[in-house]
Image (cartoon, rainbow, N blue to C red; front, top):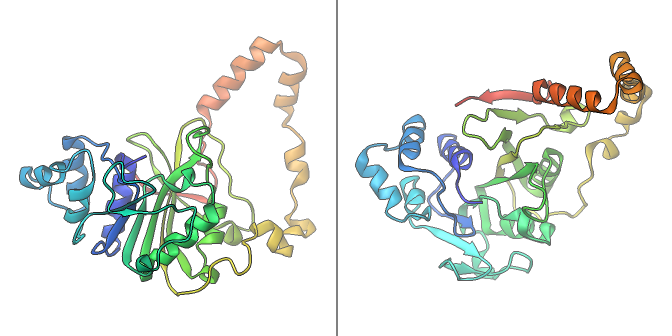
Length: 291
């Protein structure tokens, strides 16, 4: 996908939070999908050089993010890709085991929409972990909702919390859902294992899942396959945790509409409800940043 506005913000926020960009690499040679004025505005917001000279430096490598990475602290711009058609300086397939010379080489791996296109996802994640040194960070921005057909996968917070866990040598520092639009609000997502219930979102806009995790130990990943929280924790299966009737029984107004209103009226009312729904009203989606 490249660095659009929300991805750019999340990458800048990682620097703000202390991520080390000195030995950074992107998965795929990423394009910069942001104009000069928008970049200058975000650079000022996140405490980077926003003057004409700084903006000129960033856009000197346009359409690529190479000089943006050096502005963020990288010693050089590195890119990893399955082929060299865009000039990536590291060429290998994330579906296969990586060369030994890439192990522990990088302080930061940035995925601006690549994992969703890699078929062997567990192997790709192992490769990302292997590339990172202990203490390094992995930034991922991929589709969560309404990206069907864009790649092989759309991702859920549950997957990332279970995969990038201490058991696998990682800890999640930030996991955010946001709609792709320019004014999309960031919502920090509670780990379902902490919430004690599934954390879901049904909406009608393209939505990113953005994650920053830190490698805390060098361990062999997936010695035990990750399990979804509600299948792993038997406490979720206790009667007091079940809310089946609340989901099975539609509210009385809805049952009246379904029974007595003609089909066109039902469709119209459904559209009105969808347009007015507060998609991010879940207590486990906490508003964290507005733009």
